[in-house]
Amino acid sequence: MRKLVTLGLGLVCFALVAPSLSVRSATPQGGVAQGFAPNTVYEKPSVPVQVSGLDAFVVDAASTKQVQVTLRGPGGAVVVWPVGSSVPETGIKLVPPSKGSQGYRAAQAAAAFTNMPAEGLPELVDLPPFASMAKVSVNAPVQYTLDLSKAQSGARAFMVAVRDGSDIRMAVSLGKLSVPARGRQVIEARLYDASNGTPLTGFRVEARLKEGNGKATLPVLLHDDGRGPDRQAGDGIYSAFLPPGQPGAMADVKVDAYGTWQGLPLHRVAQTAFGRQGGLVSIASVGAASITRGEDGLIQSLVMPIKLVVGKPGNYRIQAVLTGKWGGGEVLVAYASTEARLTRNQEVSLTFPGSALAQAGAEPPFTVRDISIASLDKVEVEDSIDGGSTIGGFTLADCPASETMQETPAKAPVP
Figure 1 (cartoon, rainbow, N blue to C red):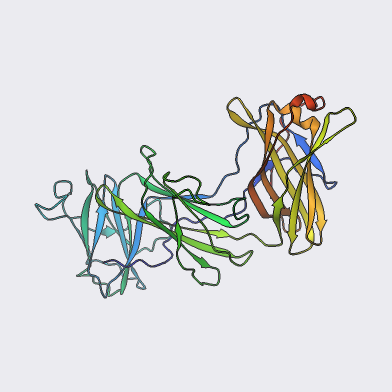
Figure 2 (cartoon, one colour):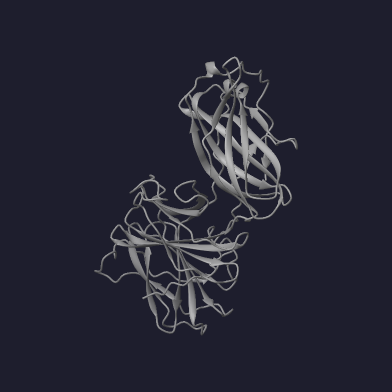
């Protein structure tokens, strides 16, 4: 039986910075709103994703001499290196199933481990120079035996990474939802067959966090049952809220998925890192937008109130975009931003002018997207919400004549 532990696997990591918005920068006067050229396509801010096709685990050599390794297709590889020792291991073997057993016909001969080739595995970085690799190609799922009974290095444990040769992937992403628990970090793990997009359901998926101080949390179970924050039951996307942590601190997260596929065990593991929001100021709530009209009855503006919790006084930019539907897709309508010196918990307003609504080529209802607040002193995003309210109850005929747009407004990443 193999023992799984949380170790740095050398998997590719990314740092989570709240999604940047490609929008027009606000001026110091605040209250800036900008319409977009007709039919400017809305692109949702990217969500950090790490895709893994690996099984990885550690073997306690004192109690375990043999472990089962599942290989499923061409291009399989098994990488092994001793933990706590820099001596290359020469006494390990990868043994195919015996004649007459299940999977015998699918397996090739026993695979010999060689010194780790320079290219390694694309999914792994910073592998030690004393790692060893065995490459194996099979034409059907089969279990090999990793034999450590004659290991020579004297290591008490071995790190094992397996690329099983299949198209089964786990994509891990980190995001935030506005409901039902605004501001809590959400983790999603999508299990799927990359060859045809088929989701894998019925797996046990869990995440384990390690804060910057080295303290690890208990496992957090991810669910695919449609209950918040999971969006849809049975779609192969497993979700959970992550436990709160120290604002502004970094945290490592390791995700394990366990289940059965094609009659044999399947394990996928991914590891990444993210930075928790700074905690200088956060978005407490977003109110419903109100419509203001002029004496002529036309809409002057849409005003959206945002309540903020200020942890540290400073200069901040609050911003959001407005989108609508056009031609079966989502298009940008307007961007609003205001800058303010915040000293206490307070409410600010974002204003979308009526003249900017008519020029976007989309009819109401409009949707508020990508609400965020950025510290101008630290030049980083402090908090963000993926989506806000929907605004309707009027037509473009209620808006003043649109302004002439020569081209799409200049865009630059907003920190």
